[in-house]
Image (cartoon, rainbow, N blue to C red; front, side, top):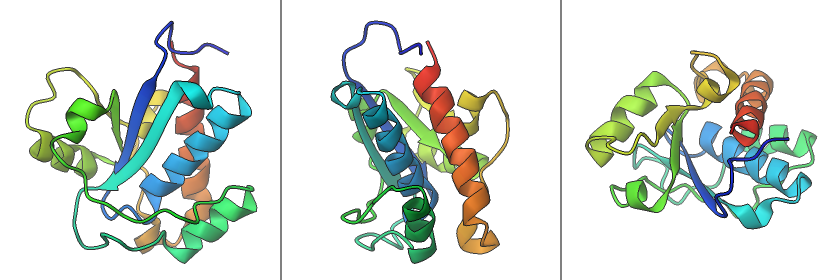
Length: 156
């Protein structure tokens, strides 16, 4: 496994529309991956929303169930909205789809440090992760998220 060179702490923020489906799934999948690799001390991982609608709400139950199928818990997670200050705090700000990227850039202003990416970029794909709130495909979303997170972890 290759791991981000010599940097000691990598701070990752996953972002989607409401922070109740895709981005918390990515947050906890990534936390699980780094824990299994013994790298949890090298990462700080969070997730956030581009909107305010779900602020304070727990992860959507079908997303919780999908994570549970893979032995991953997100029990204490509550939705929060991304802020401009998050750009200073995080090394990577990772959206799930083009729409998220557009709104992230509105929140932060210019991406002068090239921190903003779409998750599937790390899997070598230029594709969106559709919102399962609308599609109902939590299993498919989990598979895409796991692929993107593995790619992120293995990049150099």
